[in-house]
Length: 372
Image (cartoon, rainbow, N blue to C red; front, top):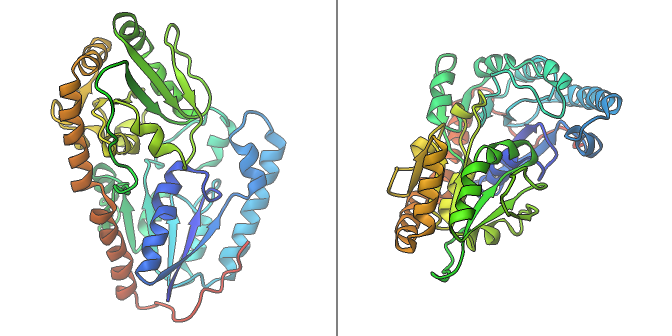
């Protein structure tokens, strides 16, 4: 069996992006004859404090310890038949580990699902941003045998530095994420799903949500960590979990994707849009980033900009069950046709097969990296 050494930044099961990329892909790769060995940069101790406020000395110590451990790991090589890097091999520093990994003479596949080449200031760790070296991403473009980009906009950017780039969007198991029949009468439930760091997106539509609840029977479900700051808006808050995510969405009626003017957002692929649509929800979303590629305005959802547009289109869906059903059906069809595992996983696997076949230095035998 061919082997992949996956250098990933976070502990397994913790990062939403990492979880729906290489962690999700791993089972499909195994079925195609590839064993995936994961090597997270974080350890559990660092992860427990990294995204909490404070703990600066413990974070600094943990980052250094994890970096030295990962450095030893790379120097031990060779890693495998293919070295896979998701976003970055290390949470801090320039592309030193990636350059050392290239000397192991195995092809590198680099997966980019966010514009990490742009500066970003963490709301929890402002000082941490100084250690990120976002421009190291360009070194990874050049070092890689192939780059996988989450959307066409990022792929076009990558192509300026590496012509070997493929677009593989996040995809979804359409057997697990299915529409559920709901009663037509009664209050309509709008839903937003996100993390603590993305909560400011939801807060941008506090005013139209408050207006809507004043004029109509509209409930709001928030799936994530903690309660949002939404003055005058009644919200049901549910903790996110992988086990309940699909069912928590299935008994909702309309998905919401509000976004701030953050510099990353025009580049991003918003997976929650696909998740909403997979369970048959029409989506009201800001016209930005991948939303403009996924949503056909007036067919499977609405693309909006102003607060009045948010209010008007949410209200239209709340008061028109026939339209919700029609647009929800179109939303589901869009996901089945373009964002299902049946469509995207064969394309992902073919990237690994092609890189392996083209490599003059493909290794035979098992990976000799020591698991940590």
